[in-house]
Amino acid sequence: MKIGIPYLNREIAIEVPDENLLAVVEPNEAEAAVDEAVREAVGSPFGSPALDEFIAGANRVLVIVNDATRPTPTGSILDTIGDGLESCGARFLVATGAHRAPTEDEYRQILGRQYGRFRGRTEAHDARDEASLLDLGKTRNGTPILLNRALIEADRIIAIGSVEPHYFAGYTGGRKAFLPGVAGYRTIEANHRLALDPRARSLALADNPVSQDMEDALSLIPGGIFTIMAVLDKRQELAACFAGDVKLAFDAAVRKANGIFAVSLSAKADIVVSVARHPMDIDLYQAQKAIDNGSMALRDGGILILVASCRDGIGDRAYLELLGSASDPAEVCGKIAAGYRLGYHKAAKIAQVAARARIWAVSELDEASLGKAFIGKRASLPEALVEALAEMGPDAKVAVLLDGAVTVPLVSVHQNAEVSGMGKGKGEG
Image 1 (cartoon, helix red, strand yellow):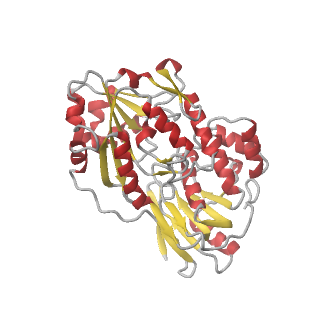
Image 2 (cartoon, rainbow, N blue to C red):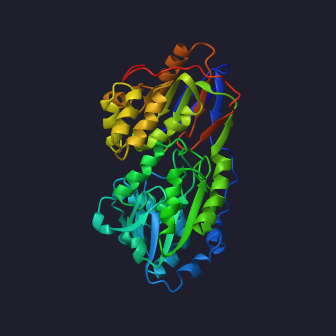
Image 3 (cartoon, rainbow, N blue to C red):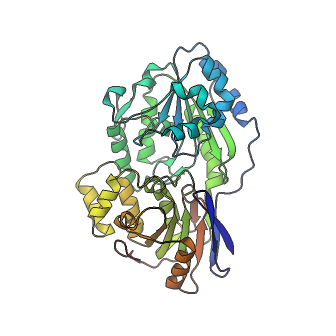
């Protein structure tokens, strides 16, 4: 079977023999949203007055938007609600979390056709700027809550985001706009340390300590909050929009997203090709999500081929420095136990996969950087696939995740008894 794999601004063609192809995995089909979906959502929201009523009489309206690492159709949403935001003098804050501030091209990507209208009112959150933060207490897990003081100064807050599975927060969207979106570095670091807990995983919310922190932070914000959350389909087009009360709208969006992004798989594969599509291909830090989801479809001892341009490099350096200091994946967890830094959860997730399988990558990253992460560089995807099939044998089964950063393959526990195996060492395989 011939399959087109998205990479940068082109498509890579691969061919998987029919007898070897287990599945091409992508988000489930969803009926396209009507053109008026955003207008209908903000006009008839969950547990809240309509948006125009919500902002009526407000003196300080703050709009929180995602940065360029998320596929949120912020610009399209602003096309619908922009007039009301302009009339009330709304200010915009980009929820960067601990990421860098957007470039000017990324501001254009975020704001879309509304760039000229709102760029002058938009600034990026800086998690390291202590003067911009207020201490609001602690969560049930002891995480200190430092949030951007603009939240407290605003009398109305509008949070625009998108909802898809997240490998340790359960789902993006809703409460995640505030933590980590506009939280202090110490808060993000303490919260992300909880990602090492086995309950912190994709699709999990109720007992997930990372998500609990986010809910607790939300409860400490005194002003009124109105959320607008998009759920996208497999073409990254709007499938649905939910608005209003953060919890009620988020719960509805999760139900929709679960039906799109949680995909059944009959068995685990010997070889998984997992694609980090734009914008998740920005760097290895973000593309790791395609490794994590891809590993759920991979048997122990198999080969995972990550396809991710990593056009902006590796992202935060701490996780790669930690991985590079370890002689094998097992040593990584011991180093994390000796002292956690933000980003180390990323190292732990990569090491967990590298300990039971081989990871290769088709990427713009250099061989040395990938090798530090126990990832072998491959020059081309067709060549990597041929090599993997040769190594795994003529009966090897291949699964292809066309949007691996957000697709969660759910494999029946009764299928495909696993063979225990360890990945090769740095830069090997």
